[in-house]
Image (cartoon, rainbow, N blue to C red; front, top):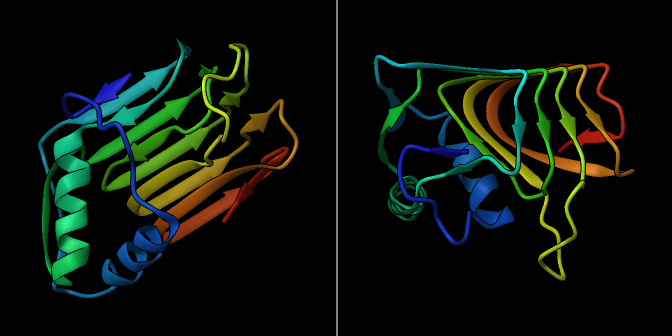
Length: 155
């Protein structure tokens, strides 16, 4: 599932995600939302990725230490989905991941599997499962709550 346009070939580094999380706490950086909301329920997905233009804009905001990222969904809710590959990137102003299964039904295409990433102003993670032990979701959200996630570490 591609969100916001043509997908990026690379995402943000762990350092960039940490810096973005810190910048989101400041009034100089904002997620400007669209009128849209995304409600993805009960799907079989290979991956979830965001557009190259979104990644490029986030990198510019991180570099400048200020700015806006526009066009994000006001709310993205992912519920009851089976997502069969690693390295997913979720981004919205408000993000909810509920009762999803993150698994590897497909053979690995990359030698190194990167963690899943969530970027939001506020995020909740409830009742998600991973079939791979020690799966990591890197959270670049300033407000976050999570509960009852199995084999999924929110970092």
